[in-house]
Length: 209
Length: 209
DNA sequence: CGCTGTGAACTAGTTCACAGCT
DNA sequence: AGCTGTGAACTAGTTCACAGCG
Image 1 (cartoon, each protein chain N blue to C red):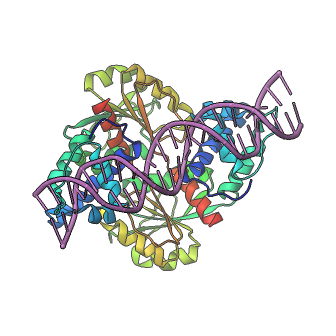
Image 2 (cartoon, rainbow over the protein chains, first blue to last red):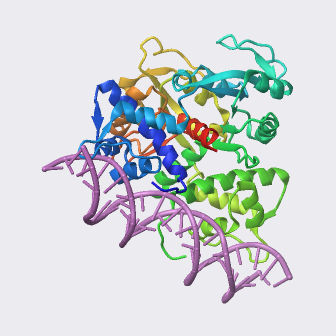
């Protein structure tokens, strides 16, 4: 397929497809059609074919997609054929829960440094033996540990400040759990995980519909 | 404004506007223009005016929007002029962290029941004194506590099963933290909070760009 | 004069429908 | 025959540009 700008939603869906494919592997299914995969992911079959078409041809006409191959190809497209190193700031309830969450590791994301602003917490060891560091050490430790993605689990009021530190430390991707909109220069991509927004969406739908 | 279907993205943005407005109240700003609010939220000014126009007229020409009034109106639109009751299933690291997260309460969301499938956990008291209940008690306790929104923090493998229980218990909105696509009948709205998808997005952008 | 409210123009994203392989 | 790959048609969402009002 000739060059074309890839919709952001396509990348999100590829990630969803990859999970469905992992499920299919567990069931031992060797092949899947766009129709079946679409059912599992709650999308239109043509959408799946179109999404994949941005990156090449992965299917066999009259047959479908070989599950293992397709999963491998999607993971490669997403850049998941390597391990990614994460640095996390804000070791409150949520931050600690995320570090302990085994899904991250399973998917190839590894925490390599943890930070907090609270002097009482600095030096404490986390469940996995990793120490909590002062935010002032962030640039140095990010460099030393080779952290590539920054995770922000602080209160909203200081999230922008931490983001700035990450940018200084040459971090190119930020996962923001604080309920605020973060500004970052063009070279740094910010993704927000905002569950209060999602709750508000539910509240709206329960109210009006 | 005459009737029109409201884009899902509009609701999400209203939620973001409300946070920015809370920030402006803290700063003591009485009035805000769509231009200024747009900067704070990282969107186009016309977008804000259009989003609001779906619901009525809230501004003063030549002046802007009165911050407090607009926040009140947006909260009312979203259905946040009441308290919402949440039931949560899966009291692992993440589930416990969410319950302890004070932001929820501040925004008007209150946990009224907690569940887990692990028999070892059932009967244990959480930090706030609330007991962990067996999933078999879910329908009864949801009814008794008046839970309106279900929160799923279980492993992906059982998420659909829990969602089905919520639907049986007449829950009309589900916030799903499990990394899987959940099916629910039309009367039940599902919102997914999928941070591995967000991480995959970052991985993709760091890989290709 | 300045800023909102809004139809019109534009852009992006999704779905259709069928050609093209296997 | 069956399912993918894809241009074309359609739908949705965003931005422009200016009329309308304070």
